Length: 347
Image (tube, rainbow, N blue to C red):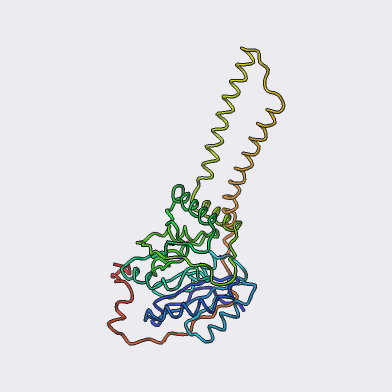
């Protein structure tokens, strides 16, 4: 079954909050996630929906979320035609949000749903981007925390956008922030960078990251390394600049060494270095050239993928949440979302 991936048309019965949950092989923990998420969202006393995005799972994730949808009218299901990766799955979910605010959260419960009311409280103060900053990272190795800290530092110092430190995808965004984000349709998507790029007033909420509730993580060090490369190449041209700087430095050293060799040969009568020295120099320069050809290839490959203009994803099945019954207006409902001026911007 194939459906139109276009987002639903907004209506007067749209939810206030849309929660996006990208999933890949998360069948073991979905029921626990949905129970905790439902309890939190019901406590907000506002219409809501949760969009579960199945990113080509090989287990029973799709069957589980479809069964949950049958029993809970707040649940929508987006089933992608294959595995496209978490960044694109998150985009697919955001494409189908209808709420005044969208919340992105992982399915493994390392980001506790109980933090959502704090995000909502800050959003009601008038902030468009409320991101959850990790105060403690339980269940993660020393190496992972150190390499993550190094990555954030490098992106902050050398990237074109300033990434908030110790911050993942767990956040709340206003409708105008979501609409701005969805205008960015590049194939190579580094969502943390895109979240930062759109700007708008932002504020962090501190929380303690919990260990994974069930199953095993799909993010090994190789995938994290590739994600880091994605971030650097998407928001920095520093690797290309380094190729220029290092090339110029090596050329300068080679020129100076050439002058030394000529002077020693003509003045002192010393013979030039032999085969071993020549071999070392050739291998050093050849290795350096190959490394930077690879760097150029990374950027060129991204240009190549963008020029094909393929859709970000294809949807095999979209099951919307059941229509929300309009509720009678009440004084309390007027305080649900931030004040909006005549142009639709938050005051």
